[in-house]
Amino acid sequence: MRVYLDNCCLNRPFDDQRSIRIRLETEAKLFIQGKIRQREIELAWSYMIDYENHANPFRERRTAISAWRKIAVTDIEENTLLLRLANELVRMGLKAKDALHIACSIHAKCDYFLTTDDLVLRKSRGIKDIRVVDPQTFIREVGL
Image (tube, rainbow, N blue to C red; front, side, top):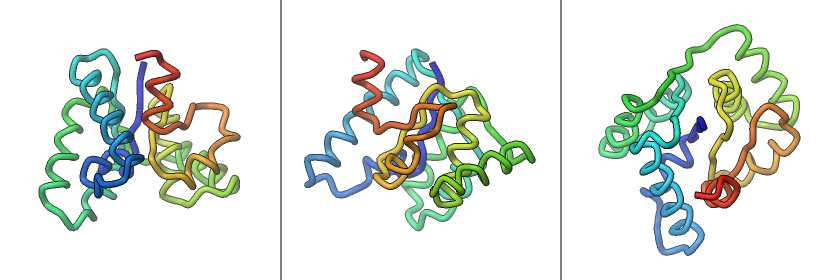
């Protein structure tokens, strides 16, 4: 099984943990990362993760997130087919960066795209090529 974690998901442990939702999503994301470390789940990476992570103003967060790139089984670079797919996703109502992330995950042949972004979760319901869910839903669906 191959997954793609967007930057919202990757950054979740750095968010304010006073909210129960954020704490639960953090625990789920960390559990999934444990499965990735154990090689029970494959991680896909992309130039979009690098791009957004580079813009993170917190060096320790950038460093912690970029370390996952070494563990990824694939690293997707921009190409014409990916951009075409991203444009289709934008027409579905997704923002350009979110569309590029999802296009990267589809191009990487991921089974799941994991995000904690409510707008992405809502706007991606009609996508047929990948399942877009939050970390907790992923754990429930996969039965981890």
